[in-house]
Figure (tube, each protein chain N blue to C red):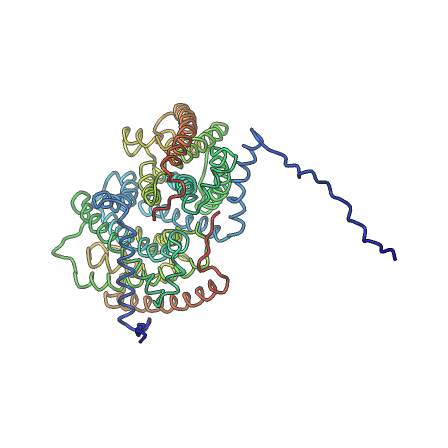
Length: 292
Length: 294
């Protein structure tokens, strides 16, 4: 009796699945997007940041506004505080989400994965910067708009394009600085956390977040100019307030020039330091180290 | 014959004291052993001094350095003691993130037969000690170089001591509330303690009299225990200055102490309820040992 064997299933193609190998600039850009993605999406998943990172800092900034009101300061100083208060969001982002990030990634085990993957570490840092910049800009903008509305701050922009240019250059230089310090922090352990912690109030003081930096004297202001926010804030105030130029530290054009130099230097040094520190960390076997 | 292991009752007073003592020691080690003592001392002083210097410069720019004004002393003392608010609250609340996401030891601490809120309170002691030194140095600099009007012979020491004891306990309870909330939050909210302290800065009359605030916001200030605490500190250190501003002029020292004590008890009750609720919610949602990496 003939038996009918069940028909064999149709043979599937035995060829290995094709991977589209991404490399070069495509990989670089994809890496930037991939690293920026969790920054943006993370904020959507944990919406409490809106309260803790917008509302509470706005109240803290308001305290400085009322100090100026209590000592009968000219109204423009209220505006100085609002602009400075909004910019603190960027400095906090640089400290905690750029500089300390590679250290934190090392502690949580991601860093070794980043290095093993066939992508550029520079792209990882840029992704962190873009993601952080986007989210921080939202925070800063809300603080700026709400603060200006609440305290009826009057702006008088003398040159809109210069204002945009100053802000953009400040951000490039600032995030370049963050990328640079991320490499340095890679070799640190708990010190990284403490250094970030230390670099808050002293920088708010030296960079003139709540008053014109010129008040600190020429040499102190000059030394503080290594932090891009010092000159950035000073130039923004000069361009946005009628008496800004009187209280400005240097002419805006010179500040723009210095910011361009800082941007280039920080980005180039960040690239060099990243390569050096990565090699050093691999050689010393400290990439997966966790000194707690 | 099997050895008997004596398990200490975790809620008995000796056990609570031991938990508090050991977690305070642990907190001190974590805060201080990353650097040599000299570097650590500088680190501990630079940050608070810078925050005070911001106000000094703001004041100086506008008034042309009129440090003899009562307003300056009012602002300086308030700001110096306000350092406790941020540091005590952060010290206690940060311990949750530190143990959960950095050291990843929180589950073991939960498993241990200890009272977890007591452990958290102990973790805040290190920051309290460090801040006490910072406050003392800040005041010293103020008196020596900035004409802050504190005359040692006129300081009301008993009032200062009682105010400090009640006030620090009140801050610890506020810290415990934040720590409880932290159990439910991702690690990027590590700055919760300082953020809340920054926000309360506005309402506590720390650096300007409450009269400067719009009436609606002033009400919040009157509900905050920190307002009464800072007023008591000012009255004990520089009574003549505190009397210059009408904010709480109608209240005697005893009345202020009574209000501070009542509000502290209220915050203690709120912290106990908040901890119970957040702890239950964190266990329910599996958040006790969560690691959040955005």
